Length: 138
Image (cartoon, rainbow, N blue to C red; front, side, top):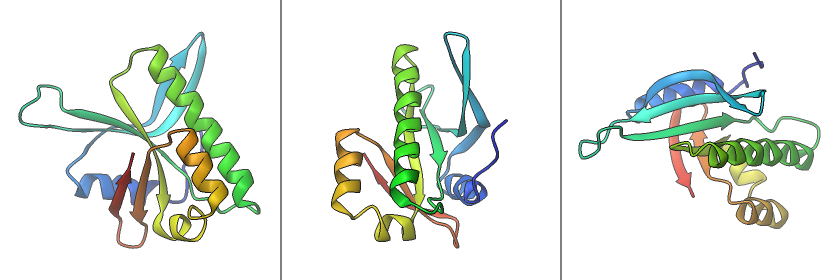
């Protein structure tokens, strides 16, 4: 199993506070004999729907020496997960969870914006200190 990101628990608690039920941590994605793990799988019941809404959340701290190296790795991982979900006709929506500080300081850069937009990366912005979600960007 992969190691948990330092913000893993903050995101998990934020999701719970928002009414999500945690289905699994280190949710296994399998394709062609390969297995990868997404940090959190969650579900929110919606009264009008039987199954509700399901999400997978990959948590990233972006604390490496180079923001753009971290971004390359995070977006690459996100794309691989998204491709597996599409190939397997999964009913999960995928999100990349990042802290408010990282979003405000680094994701406003033009290069980061173009990478996120062109690769259609869904973002969950969270407040790590208060363990709450602040913004969902699709």
